[in-house]
Length: 279
Image (cartoon, rainbow, N blue to C red; front, side):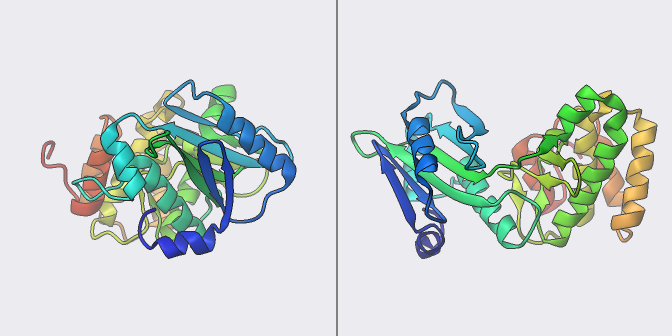
């Protein structure tokens, strides 16, 4: 795997092997859970990525399965090696980031396990990520689609969650409404951490500008006026980030509200504070 292999062995010591697949799990599993995993493994993957609750209502687990689509990716992931830019493939990034965020006590689903299938030649074919299921939660986008007047509640919960993540040193660079999971009561949790960081940045104001702008750009703009959204952002900054450098924040915020910023470009904001091709 990636990094110190002993850490993964110590934290995920329980192994399930079925056909050509190996799963590494944090704790022993019941027979009904094992049978559900075996059914999942036996299914022919119909898409490159499949995300769904494990078909076992007693287990309360969520699974992601990615079909590896190139020889280079298969070799990198099998060897636990990064790409030339220093990043791991997105599935491994999510594995690493989810484990670390949960270890810090951030409000994210707990990482329960991971695994992979191999071809008859021993080459990795599929990658599995297993987390706890956020039962009784609904994502923010689904909520506002059903009930548009809930948009202010969704925005407030998302901004509080963003601050809570920052307090744990977790910077989520793909935090949009569908990645904010809202319970009937209690606090929101974040999912899909493949594009996130668990370290400090020298460009916090620029990073926050992206995060607040991106949340508006990705669907929420359909349910609220820009002026009302700007007012909500002003309130959140005063409440959670009073020391933000406004010039740096505003420069990125104004752009991120209205233009697509790719996943790799977002990382450039976090690491360098600029996108040279745009500014």
